[in-house]
Image (cartoon, rainbow, N blue to C red; front, side):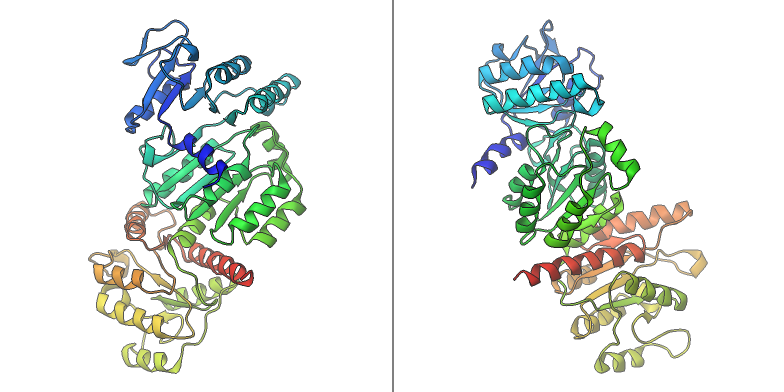
Length: 474
């Protein structure tokens, strides 16, 4: 285990936490939020509120400063005014506290000379004293397995994803999104202005964490661009990285400066990063989550060929076009597969082939199992997309669209990537609610499910591209 792994690990599993700058008001946002949510999440370590005058805050004994604590805290959260941060950092150095999260804002992100100078000062103090600092202007570390969940999905759920982000809000939303689908987050960090520790530091750390299988990044600036490129290339050989680059447009780049005080960076650098590393480029929250589902839950495909299993002639035509648009192939099936399909698919009202248009797959689990067996045996098929329709009166359907355990077991033990789609986008509130619940149910079973075929096809195209790049590197 590297020194980086050991040092940064303390941020996510500290034995004690001191929060400097806690209001007496229990419901206040700021330092009090961290104390309140850590207790709610079951954090098992010691919690120390720091307040210059209070003896007790929310049932916890309060202390006037770090020097008066009965032990050196393993994590210190600074929720004081920006101008007080340098002096508290110096106190951290004096007492021997080395892991600091600066929640406070008011530094380079405000676009003033004073803010920039204050950030340079705290960076200098940290480097002179060997302090590891997350921030400033951020929500800091998040780790459900240790009860360190003051934000995001609370208390959250451990899972295969690691998140590195310059945005607290987007990181929070992603952890909630993945949690709603039954996919947990092992560790996340909102790093804000990244004045001391930057994206490559956390990437190197998460690359060595065996519990993290996929890494999500939201970056507005590259920091040390050369190091980021090198690390992404090396890490990508063993773990997929999904990067959402903020500030691509002129408007976005302008907003970046007032968000984290960063420059959006050279487009050529980012083009090179995605081209050379195999990292997946996301451009929205849905992209971010969709790619993580596919890359985190599915095996590597052998090729681009996808078998579309569903019902509806027009839908079959549109779905085939969508897959091809996203760089996938919809191949002719092998002759043994076609012979069996011709035997089982009615001549009228259905289509035997790829795409397959046969309504029995919606309400006959045994037939669905047979079709999946054909797909997994066919050498032309590398991936499978199965449409799952929510029963409703408009299609003269009733019953339950849930997958049987036999179908779940058959899909998850086979080695061809398989996803389900539940077409529930649109304005029908009942369809949206029922489709969303079915999607979460299937995801919780370990099978990616998407609310549209377009999103499923995009996710599978990213899965195929990542593994093709990885194979090319040997």
